[in-house]
Length: 136
Image (cartoon, rainbow, N blue to C red; front, side, top):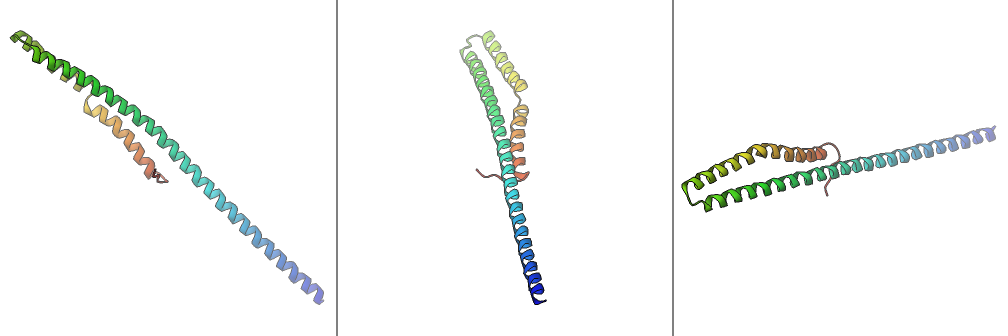
């Protein structure tokens, strides 16, 4: 009888030990999956950030092109205004300056360029607020 009871106690101890090992193994697998999930979320955020960087580069290129055309137009208009010798040439040069300035404002108004740039920057800020904060 004592043999049967001691066998049952040993069997219960082995079963309890096996249950503890299984629970510990499951918790380790759960932690590993959580870490893998966190890294995949970071990778997604980094990919979104790299996409926004290319959008920001395109916006800056647009600004550079706008600045170049604006500068060239205004410089040409100014040169015409400075080189005007007669009243007729002066009047023509003033109209040209006015038209260049109006054209630049209507084509590349500050609102249009600022909206594209602020939209890109706003998207970048939403990535930082949307989950994992990335500091590079």
